[in-house]
Length: 137
Image (tube, rainbow, N blue to C red):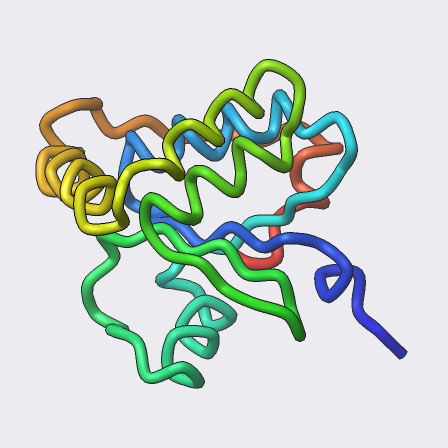
C-alpha cells in the first residue's frame, strides 16, 4: 500500500532556518493543487533521504525536491521545478532554466550562505490543514 507522501513532491528544507521556513509557508499558501509535502533535513525522514543517496547529512544549506520513485532535484533546479509545479504566474520561472546550472546554483549558494543574516529566526506554526502536509519537522 502506497503512503500518501509517495504520491506528492517532497520539499526537504533546513528546519532551523528562518528563510527556509518563510519559503515553506510561501509554498503552502500557493499549493492550490495539494502537490507538496514537507520534511526538515534534520528529521529522521530527511536524514534517511540524505543518507540513502550518499548526500551530506550534517550541512543543511541545500533545498531538495523529491518525487518518490522518479527523481530528486537540488538547489536552483528544485526551486525552479517548485515554481513550475505551482503554475500560474510562477511558470514564468521557466526562464531561469535558460541559465546554465553553475550560474543559477552560484546564485542559490550565495543566498544560502547569507540566509541566516537575511531573516530573523521565526517559529512557524502551521494550521490544522497545513500540519497534514508535514512528514516530519
